[in-house]
Length: 327
Image 1 (tube, rainbow, N blue to C red):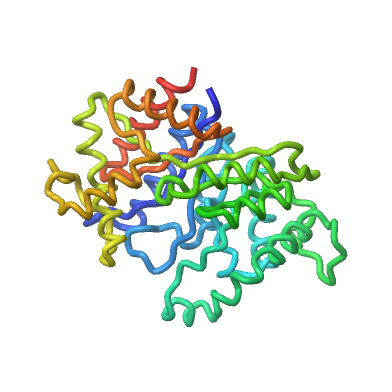
Image 2: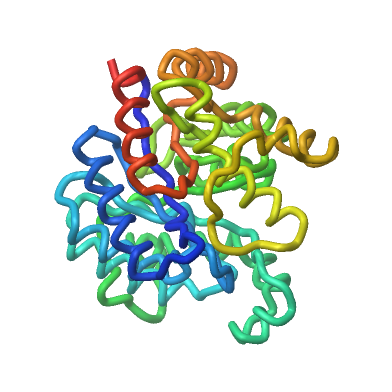
C-alpha cells in the first residue's frame, strides 16, 4: 500500500473555541503518529472563523512539540500572501526545532478578497504573477544554489522538503519544471486531477531534491463502523462545504441526519461532484473506494482530509482507515 498522510484544517466547532481546536489538532497528530501516517499537514486560511490554521508555522510548532516522529508541514503556505525571506526564516526555525521532519507545501492561490488584501498590505493578484520566481528564490534561501544578497538565518542550509501544491495545471507544470514533489487538492477540486498528474509525470525534470516524480492526491476519507454512521459523521464536513460554496462559511456544525437528501438538487450535485475524490463509509467501503482511486490516478501517496464535529470521530476514522489500508 502507498503511504497515507493527514491534512487537518484545524476546525473550530460551533460553540467551540480556538484553544479547543488547537488541543484537538495536537491529539489528532499524536493519533496519526501512532497509526504510522507519514505526514501531518495544516493549511493556511485567513479570516475564516471555522478554521484555526491562519498562522500555519505557529500551529506546526505546537504540533511538533506534541509529536516526535511524524513529518509535519504546510498544505499549504499561500506564498503570494508572504515574501520568501520570512517563510525561509519561519520554516528554517521549524527545521532546527524538529530536525528531519519539516515539509513546506506552497500554493499560488491568493484566496483573499479586497478587504483581506488591504489587511495583508498586498496586491495578491500581482503577487501571484511572481509565484514561480518566489518559489525559486525561497529554495535558494534554503540551499544557497543562487547567490542572493542576503542570507536567511535561520533558513540557510535547513533540511526542508519543499512541495508544490495545486488544483489546476499550473502547479503541475511548475512542479515538473523545478523537480519538486506535487500534491493535488482533489478533495475539493477534482476536475483537473488526471490531466495535472499526466502533465507532471510527462514533463518532470529531475532535481537535486527529487530524482523521479512523486505525486500525492487528497481525498476526503471518513471511516466508521458502518456506512450509515460514517455518512452521519460526514455531514458536518458536507455542511461546511456547502456553506462555503454558497457564501456563508462559519464554524463546523454538528451532524444532521439525512442531510444530503434534504438539499436542493444543485447542492446535491455539488456534493456528488467533489465526491469523486472521497471515501465515506465502513472500512470495507473506504478500502474499495480508495483502492479504486489509486488505481485510476496512480498516486504515489494519499493525504486524508475530512473534518468531524467530534474530534474523537476523526481519530477513530484515521485508525480504521490505516487498519484497512496500511497492510
